[in-house]
Image 1 (cartoon, rainbow, N blue to C red):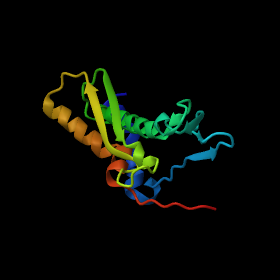
Image 2 (image 1 turned 90 degrees about the vertical axis):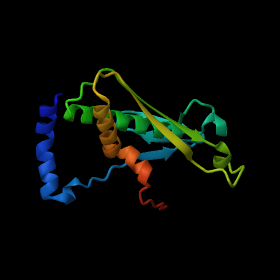
Image 3 (image 1 turned 90 degrees about the horizontal axis):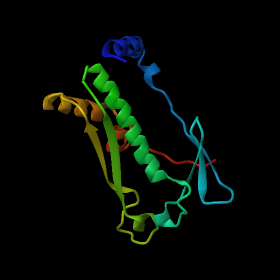
Image 4 (image 1 turned 120 degrees about the vertical axis):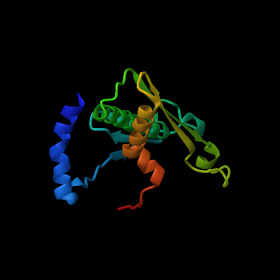
Length: 167
């Protein structure tokens, strides 16, 4: 897809959202069911069933997906799609590109071994490896806009209002 095709595709959507901002607010949902035999949760992905379980560092077998890995994978997916969309919109000459994310977890927090150890990632690093002959200022713009418009990155970076309930 080229920049003109992307603009043509998104123009009516953008116009609708400008005219009726409430139509831009969409509620996304995820659903999972607790496994009755294992310490695991079956997550419906829309394409397949993903079974998440404990990471081996917290007693898991390693056969199930780790939700921490899934979080990083969601970040990579969103950042990659955003990078490609921004590059397309900017007519940025992008050859091969890869996106990586890595995060540091202290499992003492997750296991309740040390109260001073955080539960969750202490740090996450997102990296883009770009094969391009574009000048540095264009690369900087591409990365700045990718960071700005990546939903998962911004969600992690700004911490949304969250709530928990049980029925």
